[in-house]
Amino acid sequence: YRNALVGQDSTVTLPAASRKVDYEAEIAFVIGRRAKDVAVDDALDHVAGYTLLNDLSARDLQFLTPQWMPGKVFDGSAPCGPCLVTPDEAGEHDSITISLELNGEQMQASHTGDLIFPVPELVSRLSEWMTLEPGDIVSTGTPSGVGSARKPRIWLEDGDDVEVISPQLGRLRTRIAR
Image (tube, rainbow, N blue to C red; front, top):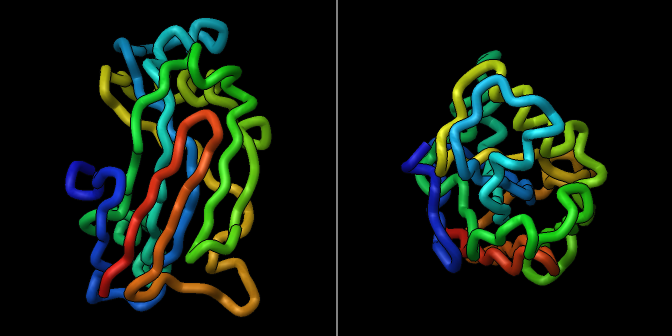
């Protein structure tokens, strides 16, 4: 949602209704041309480029009901950037690396080859369910290491500095406020 999107070097204020906000480093792709019922082999022709996204998630709100959206839509919950990298500049869709550092400590690291659904399959499947339009941003999923799965759990706090990093896509920095 538009209210969730913020850019590079933004400060995100955690929602007052939550005490359990988590980070999720993700690669996102942006649709470059309309996609409806696209075959997997043609799917990458519809991708304008890639960017980084931090899918901030209020876990206590996310699991209040079977509908997980309440935890994913607070203002600033989807920092993305720092720029859109074209597919030819990013390299192979299944070789983009990503990591996340929280206050300088690496918490997540992986690459798009580990995605459950590769980018071409995501484009194809989503285009069967709905028409994808130019500018649509699709987040692909997060590697292991999120705070809610750690022992002890790690929740974002006032003053935290979160960086999603990719050699191909740059560094997305977000500051956390309460």
